[in-house]
Image (tube, rainbow, N blue to C red; front, side):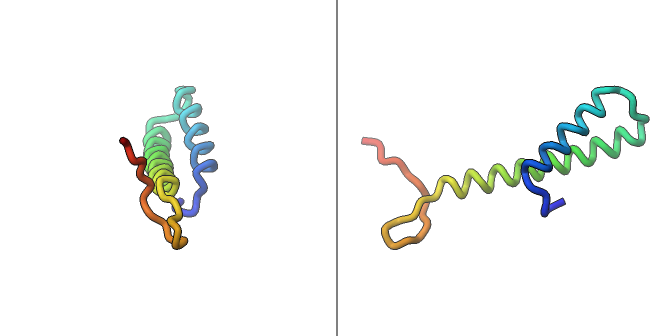
Length: 73
């Protein structure tokens, strides 16, 4: 699941939510789907945090990445 893209994980998560909301799954399958949804949610969260961290970095004059800071005067 680690190689999953954010978009595909999100699509799977949406599918699981629809399936669970239908109320047509038995208890064992519901528990399995809930576990899978939790894993997908955690994966999406990790990918979003990583993307945010990357976006918050900028290249400095020497071509190296540094944290982005806005000077407030």
